[in-house]
Image (cartoon, rainbow, N blue to C red):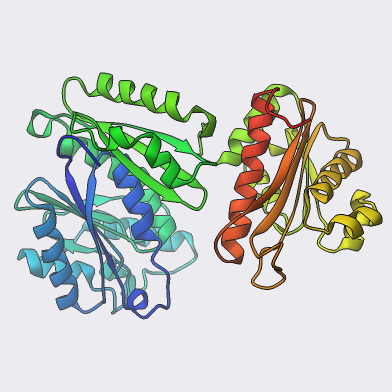
Amino acid sequence: MTGHTLPRAAILTIGDELLKGERVDTNSAWLARHLTRSGFRVTEVVSVGDPPEEIRHGLREARAVVGEGGLVVATGGLGPTLDDRTRDAVAEEFGRELVEDPELLAELEARFRSRGFDALPTPNRRVARVPEGARLLPNREGTAPGLVLEEAGIMVVLLPGVPAEMRHLVEGPFREVLEERFQGRGGAGVPVVRSIRTTGIPESALAERIEDLLSDTGAVNLASLPSVLGVELVVSATGPDAQRSVEEMMDTLLRRLEPWVYDAPSGDLAEAVLLRMRASGWTVAMAESCTAGLVSKRLTDHPGASEVFLGGVVAYSNTAKEALLGVPEALLREHGAVSAEVARAMARGACRRFGADAAVGITGIAGPGGGSETKPVGTVAIWTVTPHGETGGVERFPGGREEIRARAAQHALHGLLQVASNPWARDG
């Protein structure tokens, strides 16, 4: 990251189950990405257990890291059970009384009556006890509200640990609080934040293309967020020229990375493919082997997919490839199931079976076994057929079984998008 100092943020996840490995902490990763895109510099992520002294220690550490004007976001420990101790620990740490909020209590009672309860269960009454002076963030997905406290110039936000509830609060009431709290902070104003999503280019190759921008010490901050599916670049700036500075950086990045950039409201490449198919007036079908329907699933995760996506075939065995997609037995014998020739025959077969304008054939070795010296685990053949032509080949993806499948599905979607967007991007 480069440029002017951004507000600092720390994330504290709470729960013995996280430390014991009984539950995977997905909240911190999601929050880190969200806060980064919102113009914060996330400086620390810490997990602590349920004992109040551990929560207090984690809270002190997080506050020390962000300093005055910073933000601490904690998740977990706000439920009604005895091991939900976050409220108590925070109240003790800040020297505040726990007081029962009458409006929250009335809301909880009404909610439980609507579910058929005669009265509010006694344990749930604890949810209505909040640290004195805390601001409540209404939780429409659960019972425990989020809580916002200001202490020594640091904003501390307590959120439920249930991922769906946490995300609901962050994307709704929490966003409003951030806008209020950091509006005009230090004369800098709210950060201007934009992002670019890339796929199909290794992180190292991407970094080489923008190395001079990463090392720049100008007014713009540039963060790189890599994942199995690609790299997201987050551009942010504050100050009177923030909008212009961010737009100039975005233009530079788009010029340098244009072949690998995609745009979709959800951030999912599959949605970008659907939008391009719809604009082209094309229908599409899938023929999948090693990805086992993953590409079809990603496409149909989006509403309106039926306007474009006609169907898919998961042909795992050679017999299924022959019977369902018309792949010639001689082709399988000569080239093997994992080959560009078979992937092409699968794609063409899917077009015929569904009457689709475009199709993708995918066949490979996801592992952990099944590889050979010439075709090791991670070898995947992908072929795309469209009205603009055909393109494809054999790729080798790193990682375990699920990562190979995820990379193969992303590569297939990217290839389809490229050919649909550029009639000359084909092999013939």
